[in-house]
Amino acid sequence: MAEKLDSKLEAQFAKAPIWPTLDAPLPASQMPDHIAIIMDGNGRWAAQQGMVRINGHQAGVDSVRNVTRYCGQVHVTALTLYAFSTENWKRPQAEVRFLFRLLKKYLVNERAELIANNVRLTAVGNLTGLPDDVQAELQRTRDLTVRNSGLNLCLALNYGAQDEILSASRGVLEHVASGKLSPAEIDEPAIEKELFTAGMPPLDLLIRTAGERRLSNFLLWQASHAEFYVTPICWPEFGKDALEGAILEYARRKAAYGVAPTA
Ligand code: FPP
Image (cartoon, rainbow, N blue to C red; front, side, top):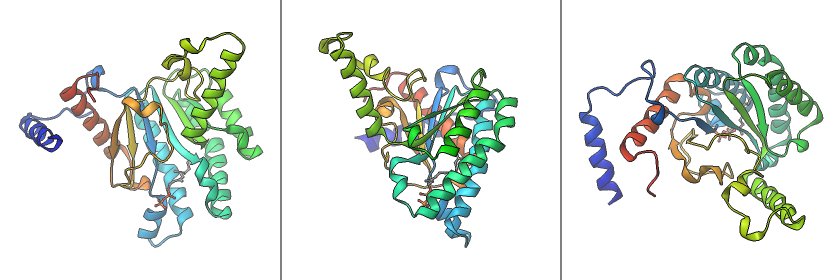
């Protein structure tokens, strides 16, 4: 059934004259407000180039910059990037150390550009578990960009969605224990207020690079109504064209199914 519907839609869109490119802005109702990306495939990309894994992470920083610039240009409200998961600690210590060095360098070197482009940098995750020097640079970049009113670039660091849901549950239970909330009053907004992403717009589009079809403990609550887009492109090669492709696919689905998801 699903297959039939898809091929019908494909045929319908094949007949459509020319799908607008983002040079001609999409209707606001078809434009994602909040995009999140599982940046995967750095290691595979490096291996394909005959390089070592860390070169893939290094090249991935350029994609972070390109994608951030592009989201700012097309007026996306929030971009959440999965930069370090709670599972990533299991990687070889040398790779973990390299990732944090890279992150620290990014936070220092990109500050001027983030400020110039009106980007506000925020972070979600268990931030107190990060190395002290990374926490300090993160705090500094957050402070320096806090008044920016353009794109919210949110880095998921030492982030795990199950951790986040546990911590939100504890937060809600504390409100119940202190008598601020009765069990019957626990609803979706009450939980959302306790998530790391509280205050961010609902997630519209979740992209995963390098072809895997897993959520990998990323934004499990927030992804409930998001469109999921998987591309075979590895993160270091994911740039403007690839992101534009994902946004146009999102817009195509919105035009086909409307704003409210039916399933
Ligand atoms: C997944 O590729 C990527 C990561 C675990 C880290 C993401 C980090 C960056 C893109 C660079 C730094 C980020 C910022 C925000 C400055 P992988 O190593 O799992 O690739 P593989 O699956 O091909 O091995």
